[in-house]
Image (cartoon, rainbow, N blue to C red; front, side, top):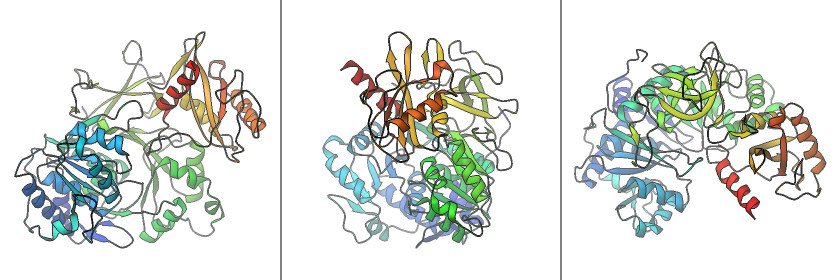
Length: 539
């Protein structure tokens, strides 16, 4: 294991340390709110004190914390772990089924959520017997849905007592659920030590320091961005306007040095006519040093377009819930389009053959395995195998290869690749080829079951002009075999892509789509789409 030293602190100790060093420095800012590190630390104390009373002094109480893009998340998140409870991170965009799964699986007793989520939870009270308290985080006037509490009113009476986390750094701090793109979301157990280690790893990889100003243009508040900025003593600006181009004005106004965005939003920004027409200095501001993308792959052409227009590197990283999350990141001074970079400090990576499980050489394709101090303690339920071998290597389920410099390039998910006549087919590679056609707005590739070849390449394509209709390629597609408006354009797109693909990769079936099914973080929902196609085949 590479020598890597990080603070031996509970997770909330990062905030206390930042508050002692620079109490007046701005920790989190929005258009109408600014919280200094000292203020955030005091708010965290009050919330922790209130929660300890609610829990009768018990430690480890599972507490749902919705990661809304608001300073309140930072307070509820750090306040929960400072109280000795375990923070269960909740996506507020989930519907009833998702909330039921997360709250029931984790055994959540107390929840800090926005009003819209509170309304859904009040409907589920009958099937969530352990959920005893719902606290609404965005109801300052005290008007809350159902039998719930207002965080604003509860904290008015909370004492200003200085507190600290009673937890050992090796105990569980958070439960983070996976996206569920390859099955039901799994609860991942992350220790204080996991999170603190990754906070430092991320801060080093992203080159954050007290002078940094990070602009967060994600739809939700991710703990990686919170923890790393607090570790570095950097300011975070939360941009709640969903318009990607407007976010650049926010970055310039804030003097942002780092811009964090999702691939889906960055793709839209790259083709935004306003970006191309903007004159004068770079729209993101003179201080901007990098655009950082994560959550799923960013298309090379989008990365190049943003790099050329903004004049800064567009950097991608790699990780997952099980690794707190970051394991790899491109460096601002050294990046290549399509790669996810080298390992962050203290992390090891190797690739193994998908069949024999033996390590492979550089430039050889295999499953990515990693280990390091950010690696999870395990899964929430025993029904989930840990995927960590006796030597500490975690099998990620992703397929890729390493170059001579140790830089990682991902090929696909192990669950997504399939075989055509015993040749491995990567849907992501085919999507990249299709996506380079300027007539394509978005696309998704999965396998269509075939008794002779194993799997045929099926492509769902969203055309920029969105003419609708469907086109059948070498075999009848699920949308029908007749020609319709846009069929000639679609046929031309497929012909152009197939010229660049190997025979086993050739697109055999095609359908025009209005939109590609994706998760809230932008990942393609291949599993659900594949099942729908199989149902059509059976019908």
